Length: 464
Image 1 (cartoon, rainbow, N blue to C red):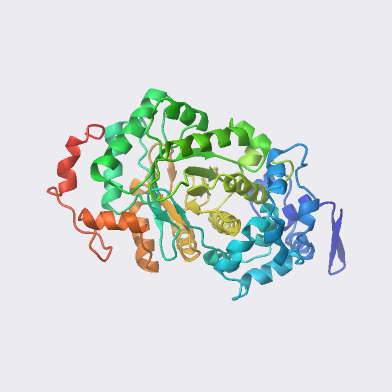
Image 2: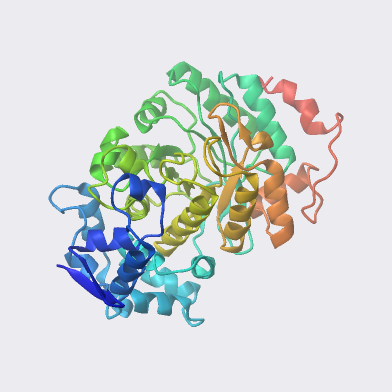
């Protein structure tokens, strides 16, 4: 089906919905690289005008990637909740934008319609929205998940403590872990990106984190970000695994390039649930995504990178995750060229995921060869805080010495919590106070060498 609109004396025609979405997308280097982006600002505006008039029902009848060829498309269509969709089924994309911005469209209403919104609908409406619209609507979306603590409560911000080490040295990782805890970070998860895929090495990391957790009775969850099949093997070998991690994408072909399928993810989810390690809930999956991965893997099928990203959220939604994280600037300037594009992408990802009912966080980050700097990250960090982001990263000095990219530090989390009055997960906050790391108000206490946690650490064999 072709879509047309006139701007001035020029008639613009878009042969199908896939092309229309790509041309309406805000400018970014990945779409130019793929040959999908609008050639001019006028063409982009014409596409937005045409997209605004597309009925939402169209997205249920015109698949961007054929149903027969792609299991993610099948998941999206087969899981669509027609009852949840009913209240908005008569709307166009432009109408949906207006409805989302109404004061009467509150958190309860948004949660009720989330199962009826497809990723393509979410991507489409985001293309018509300014940054402030993305922030306003995302802030109204409340997604609460639980494992050993509660994440996503209104007025709260959690932090994934990321204590990576270039040689997976357990003592070095434990030192960064302790550093983060003293800054009040770690309530989202303590998640290690390992340098090695050796199972004995990975087992030591899981065991060390679990021993620290048990010794100090910390209401937190841990994760090692290795391939999901390795985690299944580790579970079978008796590893103390809390969260199962996997990078995911929005097409079957791209997920296959990651070595995963929906069936493998279901096996991993069932394995993690069987351990019953959660104390306040059973959300036990952690997914990471990022715009550009489908193009990088040759699995985008001519779909623009932001819509591909939104489709990944359908995969995540299937498994009730504790955390979903867009690693927004990590893939590089080939896909998001500069700070402006990274900021826009981060706000889009957060909005789309929250609209679909996911507990969304963001690795506010960039690579050293991107046209971006820490001031850009400060801007995105603050905007996401205003938008109600579930969690961010906490990395020593904001400089990941294993992955070699720039992210956010423990101090950045302190800044955001201070400026916006955000609290930690309540169970974790109570532990920090009990351990004399924070005051009852939540403010950090000065930690000296005589602090009892430091005195006990040598008795934790995995961390000593």
